[in-house]
Length: 424
Ligand code: NAD
Image 1 (cartoon, helix red, strand yellow):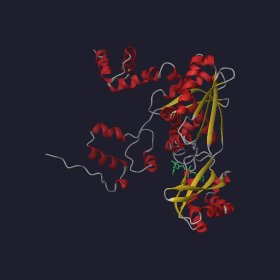
Image 2 (cartoon, protein in one colour):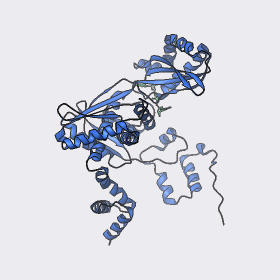
Image 3 (cartoon, protein in one colour):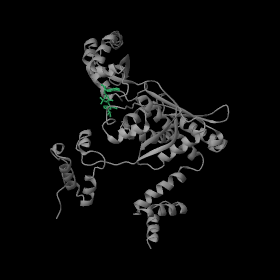
Image 4 (tube, protein in one colour):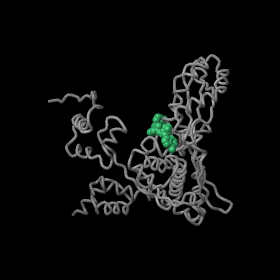
């Protein structure tokens, strides 16, 4: 007997309770009782909160939070919570930070906390003239924007500047207005989007154009975070290692195929802290990659050089639109706890720590790549994952993983053989 194809048109799912939704999904996918039970356990996230954060909630996804040690940022020792499913990421930061702790750790700075909202005007009859007319209205625009968010203004934020660009497109010139807004300790997407929507009808009235989009730009290049650190030649194992790291950087700076992987490694660290603090990983990632391509070609977010003393100098600069309030930062209890561990008192301070983590991550990746290769360090942790995939439990995991590493072959089939041997 053939079963009817289940339908994805689950009408009213959003109105169901979490348990009702899960039951419908279990039914749809034919999940067994154990899987259903597993999904029903929502761990340490209050189901009511989860249900309010997103739509159609049926479960939560637990990701490990590890803590990076050895970090000194602007003279302060800090423990860094990192949420990631990828092995080696936390260890990489610990190792890099240990090797520059003696030379002072990381020095950081920011360009401020300015976000950009864009308003798109099309079919403007006289774009150049319209641009000037909009710029003349700066004081009026400021008043309209600031009236949207009196709390933000009270906290020292609000409208800061106005930019109007004419962008040539396949559909003709568009007049693009940028509202530049200090969003203080908020990431600021909602704050600036409200301002963009408020200003839009006025722009239409002043220019005769038609507004379509009114939304922030994730290329937050007025919200840059920077970090730098120096690793002594001695601390990293000599001039060959140093030169290998510099050469690896030059490769990334010149070749987008390499730069994508180079920057992915940086984002391993950056996104893990962004996620642990309840911030928007996609916003930060979009900003970082767009910034990496700002010269017209995609390149490295970091720079590696040799100092006059022959040491290794690393630096990073990237947009980091993160907040301490807004989004899930204040709502998610784990994010709140992670912010407490970090002990940061402003969004700028958080962004600076995250930039330091990105640089640390990149140091470790380049050092491994330029010397022993990435697999050696990666494989011992990866071997544990493979051991678990093969069914190892408890103490068996470390034993099977050690056997795989010793053989230099980390494969599930070999792990299964090792496990069978171990269990006699
Ligand atoms: P929000 O609107 O929840 O909070 C910001 C508001 O909090 C401010 O407008 C202000 O009124 C108030 N506030 C209180 N104390 C403050 C302080 N110390 N500093 C600054 N503001 C303070 O959040 P948001 O930061 O405007 O928006 C962030 C959310 O928007 C995230 O969840 C993000 O995922 C989402 N989002 C992102 C995009 C994007 O990146 N493209 C688009 C839409 C929404």
